[in-house]
Amino acid sequence: MQRRERTRHLIELGGLVQKAGLVELTDDDRTTLYGALLDLAGRGRGDDAGDVLTLWKRRGKRAFDAEAEGSETQ
Image (cartoon, rainbow, N blue to C red; front, side):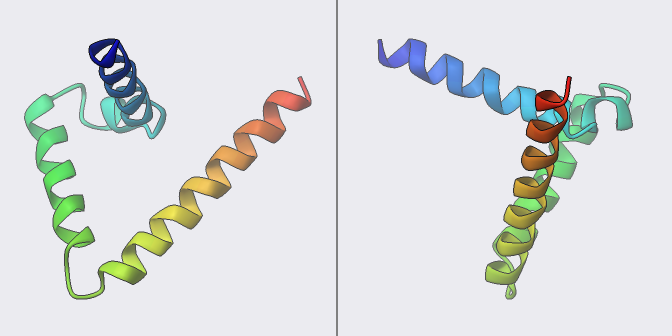
């Protein structure tokens, strides 16, 4: 059961990478994707980590909200 939940979680995370447009942006180059994610992780651990994480959270929430509004109108 735990393995199934972990697999679902990882699939959802991959979906977010796709949804954010990173797969198209990098032409599905996994080396570039990994480098970009490492850069994000570094920024999230930097001196202004709190501000960066708050900004990312706000942007993500706005995107999810906009998506939800778009699907409600269809």
